[in-house]
Length: 273
Ligand SMILES: C[S@@+](CC[C@H](N)C(=O)[O-])C[C@H]1O[C@@H](n2cnc3c(N)ncnc32)[C@H](O)[C@@H]1O
Image 1 (cartoon, rainbow, N blue to C red):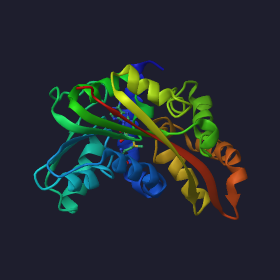
Image 2: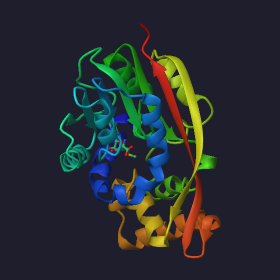
Image 3: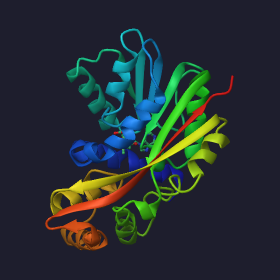
């Protein structure tokens, strides 16, 4: 799939996925988001950018950490996501945050205008992750910190079968780079290629739990990166894809629930002075 098409598939897919995203994923992603925020070490008064901000699960605590004088800007390729993040902030009484639709590889933001840039669980969907990291470096002030988290290696993520199940049925690769970034030192190298220094990574293991077959299916198909492709399946193809995916996660079934492994990598780097 060429880069432009991949961006469109993600943009409109996440527009569709936004409504199901938190219910399906907020509990599962929490360990990676928490470590991303911890390593960002935000302080009041700072200006922070949250790239691929989604519904604002990281944006809200980040905005609070830099309040009252600091500011958060959230960007995402999906219009529905940035709108949802804005509503989340208003509902949470957070007034030092603003959101704009923007692809990660081309940020229309000034050079050296942020103290910290974050990207929680977004880089795997970006066709050119090094370009996205270069943009994060460009908008950082010298000495500022970039933090990004991604899913870990394919073998460590129980739900990874979703991609081959969908790819086979659309004859293309929906997210070709998905698990590559979280394998070995790939993300470290991407940070370095983007001109970031003092690069360090932490790898964390987690468990993903789903109370029922329906919950596991909804998370995999409707609330994530394959939502666009899935929305075009007719009922028979949906059923066929559900059956195939359930087969890939059968070993993680515990009664009517599922308990599967997951892994995240969280990486930090600094814009050289
Ligand atoms: C798994 S969600 C993560 C959202 C949020 N950071 C969080 O931790 O909950 C991935 C997000 O990446 C966004 N995304 C995908 N491709 C993107 C791109 N090329 N540029 C910017 N955002 C992108 C999606 O729209 C989606 O909101």
